[in-house]
Length: 375
Ligand SMILES: *Cc1c(COP(=O)(O)O)cnc(C)c1O
Image (cartoon, rainbow, N blue to C red):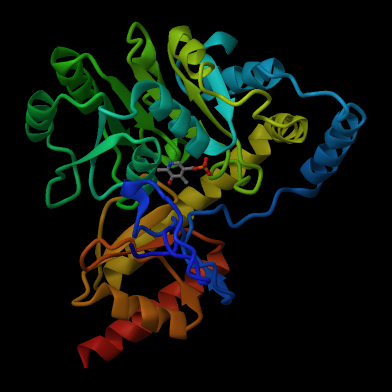
């Protein structure tokens, strides 16, 4: 047995599940450097009027903390449904929305219901590594599907994998982390069709970066398709990664199904109150999203001008390269005081769009290192 989950420093040997032995916990380095652009957080702190409103609503919630919170988070799900209906191009009801502690918990609940021992989930890699880790944690088998050289999903190749392996769950991340690649509706529909013919299985569209896309949300695709789920989060566009609030939109039957596995009272009254306050300030927060989209497009342009190969991005981050050894370049950026992400994609790194000043510092460092590389 190897690894921290199996052998503690004191040498205790724990009867950890076979498939967890020797594995490492998820985690990007949390280093204290001047410019941190590695975890796709929103660089803008919440505006002061919203901070005040959160304090007010949390104080109200605190007066009732002797009681369990609303187990079904009805008020919050109603406001999330209103937000989706306003911005997602499709009307959804409270009964079609479910919320949990971050979209990671939403995805975990979906795998607890639709995956599990003896079942498999498919994702198209490189993609969000938590999809595979959540599969592992829920005892779900993992299948790594292919992407093209320019990081797109090839419909025919993907449909062949689905037909051959008949996965129970298919993850489609759009815009995709870490590449920034958006998936068009036609591709999702083709994958959904292949998945229905093979099993039928659930198709989970992870739209954590939906608000940053040049393209409209894939939310309307849930209409008449009870096997298609769209998951969202307040961690990125709403600038509230610390809040831990994710949600999904799907057929009401999916919402009823995840209630079979959710822990009772999983969303604290404090979380619900804070999320409701944030939703009152949606327009201000979406204003920051517009600024970040402009900065994202500037990063793409200026990285290309600096001689990098850049993947088109629909998210709040940009994948760039190509480096002989991406980890060496990552290290050298760190020496310049800039932390980006090495997702293990050969030759590539990922940078989150920060404030204009942070992005300038990053771009200056890249230009300097590229010049040194060239000489
Ligand atoms: C950041 C991210 C999430 C969000 O996770 P939360 O638990 O909501 O913070 C989900 N999916 C992808 C692809 C992400 O990059």
